[in-house]
Length: 136
Image (tube, rainbow, N blue to C red):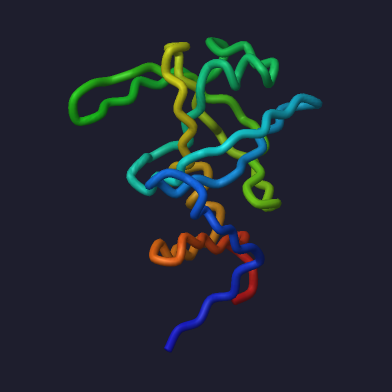
């Protein structure tokens, strides 16, 4: 039998049919609180252009990247920010949509999932979270 230990547990049962957790993004002295979807199919963390603006970031001065999906594509710009989820902080390159009409907030594999340990029991609407290097 294998066992893992987690520092935090969060009940997302009051959310929609997706796994949504509270997130705080910080850049310098500015910070933005929001909810973000956990998306293990997303390669990167993606947030709206409005969030970049609220953080005081010059959106287009970031690292430009073109993303391709099964049926479309979009442009985003990456900026190094502090990402705090359920009290667990990490620094990561986060992408912000160039199109101001896209209002999604997504926690993806690179920049979030590769920095934390996650347990998910969807039947109980519970997500368990620790830093990746936490003792288990």
